[in-house]
Length: 330
Ligand code: UFG
Image (cartoon, rainbow, N blue to C red; front, side, top):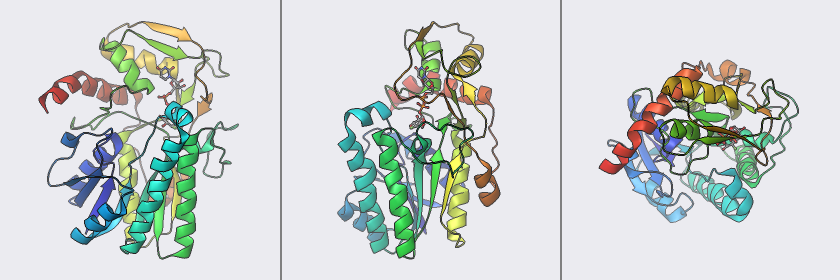
């Protein structure tokens, strides 16, 4: 049986494809290449260029390949864009996910892994954030993902269908073997921005707010290395295949780093003292967001292997350094 990976040409989905292939699984990727790269999907994975909300395309895939599970990564993920164009997010992340779930049900595919987000919590008053923390997303991105969690919950009650929704905290780093990393242009994520500043690909960088109620005044996040995140997906897949119940799980390490700490590590790893401008807060940033990560450890037996900010930064740095050459080649 094969796994359908939507968004498998992107950063996180691409790592899922590599891990599945490493595990000897058959993989079919569906990606519209809006932000992903065809070169990220290598044989023996099958690549289908298309829209994950297109039920005709999905029916063709399900008729052609024997698929028993779907790992659904394809989504829009830029929070400010979601604020500026909410309907784009409700179409891509919510309505198309609905079509995908329906097509899966119609094809008798009963196992579904969903990329959810810590953005479903909004600005939590207490950290670490457990799965029981109230869900109060503060932007259309978080809402668009939370609605999919609700759809999955309702469908799983109504049908013979199980899912694992994984709420990602701040995903970072690259494949330890150097095969894949964060390649999307115009990325806004802290580690990528800082690494680009170190490489001279941008003229320094800004810190968004130094007056937060944290020890050094900058925001704290739980940075999870991408292969560790993907290991959680493989455990989720095994859980579902063995008849496990539906789950909603945080994916983070349970401790965080401030923006200043991250920048210091990037300077240390790169050896470059790039310009850092201390600026004003960015709208919608919670001061602190750290995962309560007990549930995933106890229910799936997940054990992180790359919980080391220096390692994460080094992977991101090496990937970014070599990226221009890679994109130029393909
Ligand atoms: N930051 C800077 N300067 C930059 C970029 C980021 O100071 O140039 C700061 C941000 O203000 C924030 C921290 O670094 O305090 C992390 O910011 P990121 O943009 O890397 O990540 P976010 O925490 O904002 O967002 C991440 C995911 C989202 C998801 C969210 C859930 O990228 O997709 O977590 O809370 F919605």
